[in-house]
Image 1 (spheres, one colour):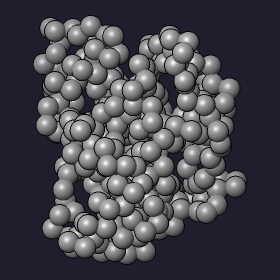
Image 2: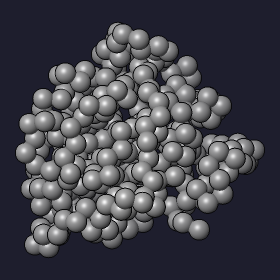
Image 3: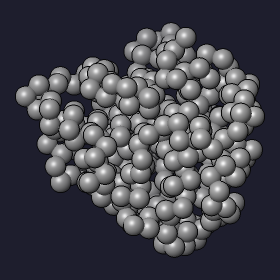
Image 4: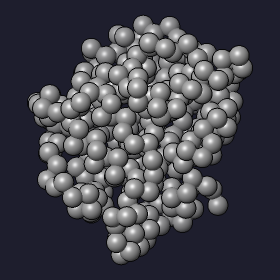
Length: 302
């Protein structure tokens, strides 16, 4: 790695009802580790499924991807219970995080894939995610020590009202949206970081998969390519959701299929007003700059 590159440095810790950034502090990285980062509801599980195809050459039928690629900084289960299984993995490891980059320990020898999505689409997907959480989820998360502020149940079933709470509260009641995008955006040109947009997968999943494989430096098993692609389609993932959903979907009403929901964008267009849309677009530019705001909305770089 180039010694002149200015690598990201961790500058703070984050502890909330879901995440504990200290889980990364003493983590023993392997040089070929893969970290998948995102705010949330931006295609994380989709990318995990894609990466798994390359690591296992398409032989993922029956494999619990959600367990094999854990959310390391998630507080359930706590790190002492989670870490031994991660350390025992013999395949190339691929872990996920929802932390902003300035709360991460950044390892120059590791490859990072960051996937993002228009905030309005994230909010719509969060609405479904939030409503699908079951009593076990609330009881388990809100029983964690020093978890405050606790995760509240949804206060409204109106999607516009829910979105406005998300917008005005910067990702509420989950974690800040804009800082996550902004901190990762600053690392977009690093040689071990691959930037990906949800819309890229919607528009050309096969082509994007090939780019991911090239970035990971994993040769494509062409004889298994059709199978690999099939196993990354929405229908396949929906029908096999238990294998790709964290903890097998036990935290969601209706199980894992509630976690793998629509897989589409722009559902907000028929609900938000013109003023709502204008306010979001102005906020995006103010928060992350015009170039990033354009990419976040379209998946295309200026």
